[in-house]
Amino acid sequence: MEFAKKILCIGAGYVGGPTMAVIAAKCPQYKVTVVDINKARINAWNSDALPIYEPGLFEVVKQARGRNLFFSTDIDAAIDEADIIFVSVNTPTKSFGEGAGKAADLQYWELTARNIVKVSRVDKIIIEKSTLPVRTAEAMGRILNANEKGIHFEVLSNPEFLAEGTAIEDLNDPDRVLIGSQLTPEGVKARSQVVEIYANWVPKEKIVTSNVWSAELSKLVANAFLAQRISSINSISALCEKTEADVTEVSRTIGMDSRIGKRFLMSSVGFGGSCFKKDILNLVYICQSYGLTEVADYWESVVRMNEYQKRRFVQTMLKAMFNTVAGKRIALLGFAFKADTGDTRESPAIEIAKQLLEEQARVVISDPKALDNAKIDLAPYVDSDRIEFVEDPYVAAKGAHAIAVMTEWNAYKTLDYKKIFSSMERPAFVFDGRNILNHKELFEIGFNVFPLGQPTLKHF
Ligand code: UDX
Ligand code: ADP
Image (cartoon, rainbow, N blue to C red):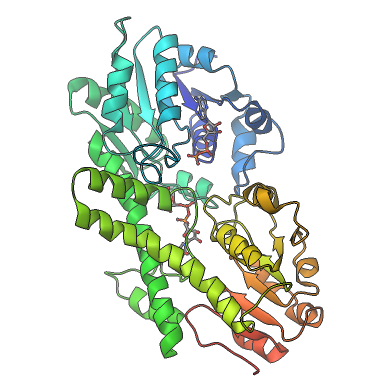
């Protein structure tokens, strides 16, 4: 079959995999190839055990795989045949040199760009799909167009706004699709080709176009605003605990103001995920590099508040449990950074598990999807006899002094807490880092209950 377009995505991760699967499913007229240097990952994409857990993803992959969706490690062949290349390789925070701890590490992106130049024989459209600092497209354009083959690469920015756990829904029915380009005739022409892809299923009014720098910055700012809401409500949760106000009541009331809106006002043990912290620090770094110290400090405080919330949670546990958790068994319910994903990147549970281990607690990690990643995150402790990984929450809680909810998995809301209570040490504690449990009922069973930003319910 002759395909109308050949689309390639370099990087088969949480963004590239689901996005391309949906494009392929919606547009059978296009050939969509996804490549990665990680062979195991590609093998998994070609199997029934996909490398990431995402509700609805398997069905979409199955619909298109082998028809017009292909996963491969032959990067060069795929670059050569592609008309449009999305680049979705990882852009972690730099861990070394200038900007360490804040700036984005662009080495994977640059290597990819250089490889595209090496292999290509005709003009191509290159699309940034990873979150990148503002003006990266410009730098990449320079690297790509410094070739002596006379080939032109038009670099666009098409940031992805999907959230994990709802990736397929978000891709099927996005709030908006953003495509940034240079405002030159070539840039605008390339942009219209990308609009054409999305217009196969996204209403035209939701496809927003802008200049390339606005697109790059919009992605960072969207994540910074979302994270800021969480840090704001988390800061209020600390105040609620001192004043006996209830943060869930505050969230509900302020959220009814249509100017504020009710989403992203759930107080938690802290935000996680691969984007929020990384993108804010990236924004901070950019502001600092332009001498905007006050602006940088303002956004950095969102991350500082998040670190504080995690520390505060452990301090509450310590204080409640008579100032020591040494030798005490503590079951962490959930390790993923949010429900419906196996992803643990920047999960607050990592820091909390580490702090509890430092306090010499015996920590049992439980999660329906994230135990493999948890073992990697806690690799330095895995051989310790003070850490266990158990999928079954009942087994995890058996003999524990405390359980602490780290992830808002639905399954945790309906556990048999009477059974759990009867298998635990006394006094038995619950620390609800997501405010998802029925605190009154738990208190009546006999637990001492420590919600977030709400009065504690204690039997002593
Ligand atoms: C985020 C953005 O939502 C998405 O648009 C962007 O493309 C990538 O980054 P994601 O990291 O997948 O998506 O998850 P998100 O749902 O935003 O949650 C991030 C973190 O905030 C999670 O740890 C979540 O538990 C926490 N959170 C979210 C809260 O603590 N309270 C809330 O009210 C909402
Ligand atoms: P994201 O959440 O942004 O999708 P991931 O880390 O899940 O990030 O995915 C990025 C993917 O990019 C990884 O699977 C990694 O192996 C892949 N990758 C990194 N560098 C290259 C490269 N030069 N060529 C192809 N794939 C790459």
